[in-house]
Amino acid sequence: MFSDTQALLEAIKRADKKTRQVHGPEVFLERAIFLSWYCEKGSCQFCYMSTQKERIRDGKRARRRPSSILAEAELLRRIGWKVAFLAGGYGVYPIGEIREMARKVHEIVGEPIWLNTGILSREDMSGFDESVEGVVGSVETVNKGLHRVVCPGKPLEPVEAMLDSAKEIGLKTGMTIILGLGESAEDLPALMDFIERHRIDRITLYTLNPHPGTPFADTPPPPSLYQAGVTAALRLRFPRLRITAGTWIDQLPNIGIVLLAGANGITKYPLFRMFGNRFGRKVEEEIAAAGRRVVGTFTDASRLEGELKTTFPEREEIESALQRYVLRIRRGCGPA
Image (cartoon, rainbow, N blue to C red):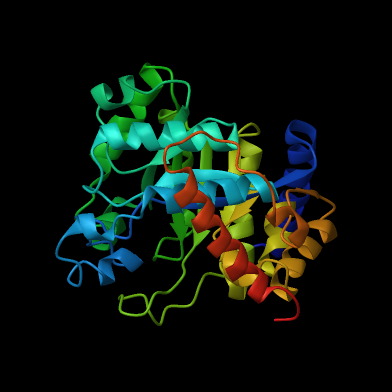
């Protein structure tokens, strides 16, 4: 398929039809909420956190204030975005605090939360209540040889065990993949096998975002048709799989083609730099050009305002953080 342009375009056409039949025309704007900026592993070759490990001696100092996290959740609720998942590096939060944060974010946004917080044991996951919908495994690549190189401190086996345990106790499961690390279209059958074996409910397909200070700093992201081809192949094989496509601000023209290829949502965009200006408008234009309907907004600044409906003890701190966020976004609104 990838070597035959006509076959690729035909697959995208069929994937678009299947997506509309099964999922409808809606496209969701998603954003991961990070709980911290530190990971005790700090060894993934592509990751921003790997550049911070030597700078941060105490991981607890890289934890975000709870009020800041909850303010971000409230902001997403107002503009109609989905919380992709709560994310945090390995070894930063004890499970009790993760559960508590999930409950609070769930109360704010009104939807159960997904967690991408490292390896969780069956005992850890058994303690989740209705505030948690599922867990996400950061797989990144299913090419085992490549995985050992780019994620030397994060073997696949514990991730797979966590996903299987989650299914056994009734949780949904998700995974993340980064395209452009050195894998190829020949790895696609292994990816499909992984999804099937572990009964994955959702997948986020990122394209490589080269971070300064990493071995991938000068590596360009993969071609847009490669991400679209992988998306289309997964949509045709797994019609009910939820697929989120992640790119970066310099890859906005990719949005339309990955939506036509079967993505349900888009993510990875810097909200504070893009909302209400030409970048945010470009996102909505790409969605409309693909014949899809956006859920939420990247442009309507009136939705930034609202009432915080919570009785949390830190309500005043949340309100203060919200005001800072809204002011920061408004400064960037208008022509960029």
